[in-house]
Image (tube, rainbow, N blue to C red):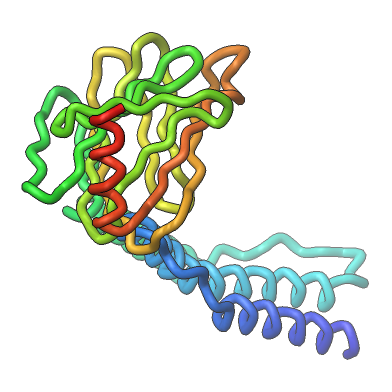
Amino acid sequence: MNTRRLAAASAVAAMLVTLLADPVAAQSTSAELINGLNEQLLIVAVPITLLVEGILLYAVIKFRGNDEPQPTKENRRLEITWTVATAVILLFVGVASYGVMADESVEFTGGEEEVAPDENDVLIQAQAYQWGWDMSYPNEDVTVSGAGDGPTVVVPAGEEVYVNVSSRDVIHGFHVPKLGMKSDAIPDQTNYIKTNASETGTYQGYCSEYCGVAHSQMYFTIKVVDQAEYNEWLNEQRDS
């Protein structure tokens, strides 16, 4: 009896902690979408996990002293039920995931398709190479570079930011976890990712695909500032 109570209490506690945990505020539109998708999948996964673990604990406790187990009898109704339930869950996961990937506020595109940002939007070209990054603003005639932690890219808060990701040599990866931005950098291919940073601050980015002996040195930084500071920064870069 004590074992059953302990198992039930542990399961209920795990579910409450998962559902009542206060999520970290998203720093961008793409991060908000990804976090929302994770929460939806978690709401589905937690009851399934508790059900499976509950059945497992029940079987272990009830049949722990059974020295002559009998083969399971065929139950066609049960087999159809769990097959249909699995199909429904997979359909939900697919639809929810597609809804995030196809959302216009994230906009993942590939190939040679051109992106035309609006007047106040920011377009950044991020070209990876062994082992560093070339970052530029083609519409502003500004290029940034840096040693150590790599180049620092400055963007305004509350504006759409498009990043043109490509590679000069091998496959790399553009990844800024806290902003929910990630894209492969592939030679002879252009991938665009889009976000809108809602919180000012400094966010670490790095190469997410192993690309050689100095892969771990491929860092860069995205600094989100207000519009006035962004305009001032652009003017300083043009004058330097």
